[in-house]
Image (cartoon, rainbow, N blue to C red; front, side):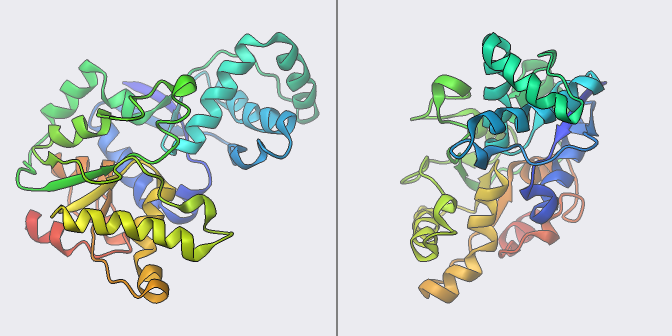
Amino acid sequence: MTDFALFLGCGIPSAENNYELATRRVLAKTGVTLSLMPGAGCCGHDLEQVDRPTFLAWAARNLCIAEQMKKDVMVLCPSCYLTLKSVNDHLKHEDRVLKHTNEMLAAVNQHFEGSVNVIHYVDFLLQDTVMEALEEQFTRSLDGLRIGVHYGCHLLRPSRVLGFDDPITPRKIDRLVELTGAQSLDYPDKTMCCGSSILGTDMRASLKIAAAKLTHVEKAGLSAMVTACPVCHMMYDANQAMISKILKEDHQVPVLHLTQLLGLAVGLNFEEVGLHMNKGNTDGIREFIG
């Protein structure tokens, strides 16, 4: 049994409960226990460009909670992953910055030791022994589904910090999709941003970016999109209705969290992977599963 401190961030508890639900159930199949981090807050991602010392202390406070739990941190959100991993590594190697950060943390009775690691669940699942354990749980082949993976930005970039995958031709999530028997197919602008970063400043432009990728997926004849980011999932799933209202474009693309797809492969039903909580049309997936 492997036990991680689960960092959920902001978007998953507030709007993407199906992501947590499916991830917990899929990882449980590989013998993983995910323990919530008491008192954890936002990762601090949006503070970096405003106040870097506060950004470092804010992220470090969350890492301190995991240190007290004596558990490595597992992250589901790529932005949280980028923040916590980069801050964790930075403080472990910069004594002067660490000293100043711990002085700030003292105000909330915390002290960063650098005793835990930060991992994204996709990297965990791709470990040979874990992949074998997961594959042994597959009871339903997804052969016949044509999947378009959306990687988003913060799993791949900055690549020198994350080292997650090739930022130009990534394959890690595709490998997990193909493990289920489904095809993972390339399509135009596969690695492009979902547009969420400008949603609050220029909604129309943001929705156009998302709509363009949905159009590429439809023209490629894909059965569904798969994401590993709660924000990207919101852009493509929940915002199809907004795209219809504002841009007058009708899209009916099923958009699944990666762990929802994996959950269907291990035999979980629609409600067990939270498919009933998806906002977009998932009829095609339901019909395929039967």
